[in-house]
Length: 502
Image (tube, rainbow, N blue to C red; front, side):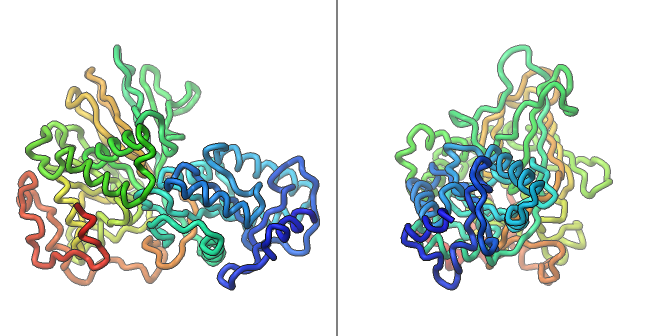
């Protein structure tokens, strides 16, 4: 019983505001977390046991402050600093102990495993890291995940109702979040497998080049072993996964420079608003607002690669025509990109009928493919019903890079970028994305993500208002020179602070 005595000794009487309930509802005893600890007997099993993962390097000093607060409120052993211990080691140890305790007939361990929920605090890359580990465990009932927005974009937390602003770290704020976790509903989302294959070059590297060191979301994006069924002799094969998006081109290049600068000068990146301002400045510095003048057309997606898709399960590969001015392509799984913007939107009735497009569901086995011409085109997302160029919805998508088209390109998965060298030999470099399985997220209200099984989810607009900001026809935008904001319906939303857009 010593653990419960310690909880009282810290000044917490085991209760908190009604939105949270008693703290004992979230508490996990030591012997479940630490295999060598002595079992204890408690009256009631916790109804919402949580294991908390926090990236102490995220959010400036916020990560370290959150760790301190969670450890004050819960068992220190159920709160992990990801800079000290990786989630795969933690969860492997925990679930091995679960199996051992269940074999011994431990009813508390059975109940804790059944009710377990995970909390991860960090950027989108940190959240994807944990989702990848949970997915790799292939559990019959994987624990659902709640995300604390502690990064710059925070697309994953925003998609599921957890907000996009960095949180407060005091005890009241953490207790309030725990209450939301307890009341949150489970929601399955698609996960996507990405494979990249290229012939081993005669000279020069072809490994992904990250900003100084490999980001967390690339933890599974590695060269496959010789015994892996995906391995092909004479080729380098890389594999990985994502849950929010894969992107290539303009946006990934800006992100790459941002992450590189942050790695070199971390002291300059302590504030979320400052980070977002730096992003905008880098876009200006790299010339993406005048891309047709400052960037060679050889970097445009159509000139760089041939794109093929399989639209639905069981379908056949078909070539996807990419407009020649598209400089950035995004394969989107969730309705949030670049800090909460929705590049796909909701297609109008006419688009549904003419092009077989649907609203972006997170569990329909389809990924939305969207293109952008330059930074001005991206700002169309701020307009009512604004969206990028809808290229396709697909169950699988394949990029075949043309030989000698460029020395390298920039790619990004779930907020984490890298520079990808492209061999100069005759053989094609291939990147292929396919539906893998599903993972469970925790959703709080208001939740942006929609399930295909939810009858309240919109299938389409009953009108054609989104067409005025679509910019989907090639002749509507000639190399980015169309006058931005010319659409009659254009209006900056009230919640957007125009002072911060510069």
